[in-house]
Length: 515
Ligand code: GDP
Image (cartoon, rainbow, N blue to C red; front, top):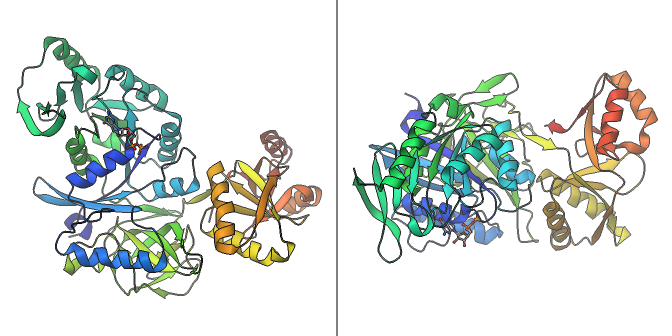
């Protein structure tokens, strides 16, 4: 039978607004799950030691922090051991392309909402990214140990703002000071706070008496919303909703259970017109993230590959789509490596860290036979564009190298105007600019200032060659090439884009570009 069935995987991310409790929940998930790979953990379980020391050595040697990029844990659920790969999404208020790309590498997501605050701006943005790719979402309404909104209000907000059907799977019996526990609709058991800390310590009562005031509300919740429809959830049309407290450990076990039961196993991935199934024999995968060295004396990077198919073995030769000739993957960082026999292999759904010197780029496909190109890892039209001014004009070459490198890593996008000297960098969030300036100085010894540019956004141009040529003749001052040499229209305002689109109906002004 298929390897996917023998080694079930759940590869997921947590999306939330800062402070909703993502970090706390992550810690609790790892603790519950008997984490194989836990940052700062002193005690490694038996066989795990070798694998741990492997990547710790790599981190030390290369000064790369890969520790929290992928967290793997496992748990036996109804006799079946399931491996969970939790991918970290950077926790900034700023939306970054890095976050987006991480979401292209997961099969599902948990959306954490603060019970008192509901849907916040960053939650919404990340949710929209998930929707673009039909990533199914399980909702976790956190902090029910504190005074929060009425749960009905939260459910209705999720339904309205996200246009999702909601299906509560649990219910808080009281909240804040009145919090009496958490009722699991599936089992009918109530998890109750215990001891001075009022935590969940593992006791559950079946058929526990629930005060009348709550019993009525709970009945309403059970009849007032649809039952969980697995297909609707997996299509991204319905979200099962869990309540809990990451801090006090309520609802965490139920949440792991829900991922195991309902979240999809590794999904087929689009490659042009075809879908590559995890059942395919040959190894395929795509790079969704490249992390550079923190040590400026090294040029090493770690490329993170989401494995799509096949069984990966250490030393295997894979061909990156951007290179055309195979590379041997001798020292992969395997996050799933808790046991000696399988420490050198990885399965679909797993993430492999591949050390390299800049040959691997975000969006690259790796495959054994060089016969697959995964699609759907777009670049986004930047929302902030800045002109890069060198302080020391003799460093033009270094700057160009740095900008090319950093755009390969996906930190920024770079545009070289057809007319005029200085390069323009584009980002979707301010934070990326801060990262750019500090890395230019620290790693490339290039001092540069970012100045206002006349442009507000950029669009990739496509269309019949004669129309493109004609457009280019008249709009030289608004054209640039991206790092791949593709032609880009630099717009002074969003209005400008609309105006040109109307004037040039044969041309496509695209806000995304797929490599
Ligand atoms: P992140 O920014 O989403 O990673 O949020 P954190 O996990 O760092 O949590 C933000 C704050 O909320 C911290 O002070 C946590 O202790 C607190 N917090 C997280 N979960 C809970 C919870 O379930 N109940 C309460 N009362 N506080 C929580």
